[in-house]
Length: 294
Ligand code: MG
Image 1 (tube, rainbow, N blue to C red):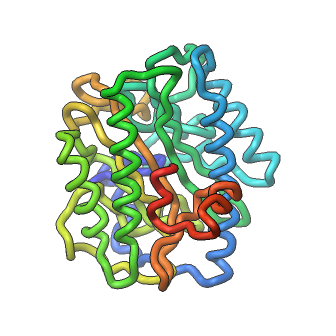
Image 2: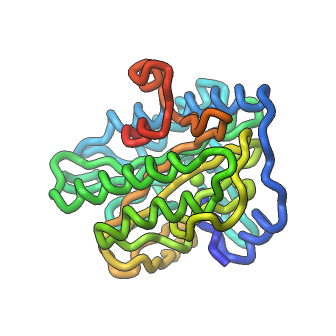
């Protein structure tokens, strides 16, 4: 069984507890308004962090800024203390995963340096609902190889989101992501997946970043998903460090991650994790193509 993602990664036994036979929860209009509010808030945090990333900044500084912004807005940093069964509680407000780290990295005091890439994953809870988003950001000037990795990961996210229409299936999401990633020969991480989201960060269903069209659960209006491709330049295989959380590529090659929380509506996918400004620049249309902006 695929491990549930979210704070991406959870061991398989936990995945069945997290996702097991639980029903997929369709949100009411009232719930959806709360999902929009928390989505916009976490998107503002994401864009604030994006603007802070440059050589010399530490991920601990990014973590402090993110936690303050979440709390100042009246929300709770969802990751802090997050403790899947058998795990130690996650200690930070964000996951900060440099270069060969895939997900769940700990913030630290090592300054980011020119040419690095840094994946930042974050979630907060506002009025009982969770918004979850991630991006991979270049630190200063990066190689063309890394630029392509980030671009294709964002394109995979957009293509996955485009599948989120009523009556499509969860397998369609993974198939769209897989087809694009494989064109470039990237390793698609299979040990961690996207997920349903709502009052809990991890709800059913699991959303793998690979699959076959027309398989898995039927998608319905009212569902909210966190779609989150993780692509590696080399092998898709992963390894967890001694801190019990940080997931790295087995071959030490770089990895990128991009994530949006989306809602399925009768008119198609709506990206919830966009800032006010991003929504404005899209003319009020947060259709899937905007996901490329991550
Ligand atoms: Mg997630």
